[in-house]
Image (cartoon, rainbow, N blue to C red; front, side, top):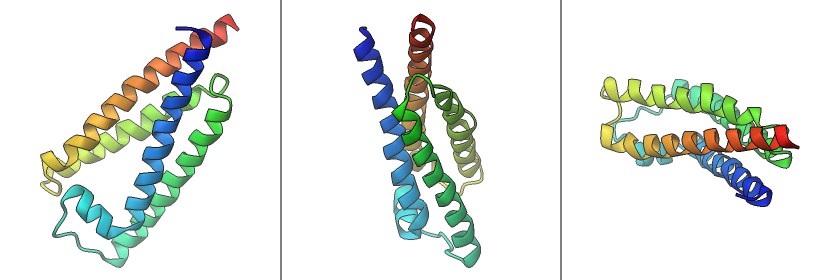
Length: 138
């Protein structure tokens, strides 16, 4: 890969996260979308649920902007890629596992999110490694 292709690959990685986080923020702010996205027909939309989901949406929106900030200097801010893998993506996957284990969400309803997260983790690891090589050479 040329340096230009490496930079493009890293930008694409950041933008995958930016778009995913923006969509997640919207889902967190809309209980109806959350019900639909995860097949939660029995979701109780209480004041407690709304409070927690709004906090989560605020944090997700903050991470959206953090990735946008990191994308402005993708090599210099490559550490954000690792922080996005752990604790963010790994934490989301563990939360999903616990939800499936407690029979709150069906396996088939969370599987697409897991597949996407695994692909994103792979892309972020590759992007970090490529950015690291680029930084060392540069």
